[in-house]
Image (cartoon, rainbow, N blue to C red):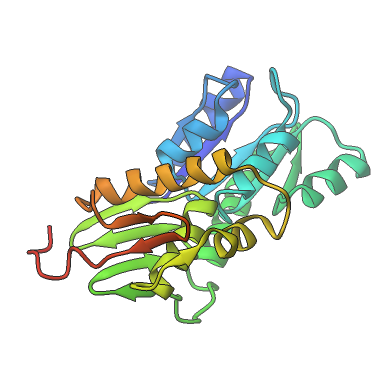
Length: 234
């Protein structure tokens, strides 16, 4: 069963899309709060997104860019704006397909099934998924997940990069300079921004029961300790 997120401010169209999706045995999730689309995306972690352009507050291009910072899941624009430049902008901002209104719901469903097959099904790449493993702690960078035993937490893009950097060098200390270069490519970032990201990583580790795994080494950087290796896995 796949989850399809519907970001459409016309309630009639949104409900009809949801109805057709559920006829195929999948789950349609309709968004009503258009000020917090990204938060809803992170909450539901859908397999595919249907996204309108004309939305309250921020347009679909904006939300497409925000989602692309978190996920590579398929995004299909559905819009009454049919100019070539609208379609170009959708694709340039990270979309996988574009459907103009009015449309046949059967065509929408066919395009959804096509994207699902391409990414998750028969046509998906058979390349082995990359993982980073440290004493039973497993990071899946491509899906931005961290797993210990039977517990899994979802990460942001920067949290994924930061944890991967720490895991690859553990138990060595990782300097602040190395972390800054990995996360921001030498761009100027103040100490508070880095501290915020370290705090977020500590929170993700704590969700796995690893409250003391990340050490601050004064004047040097940070070190990830394998505090979990001798403990029973959850």
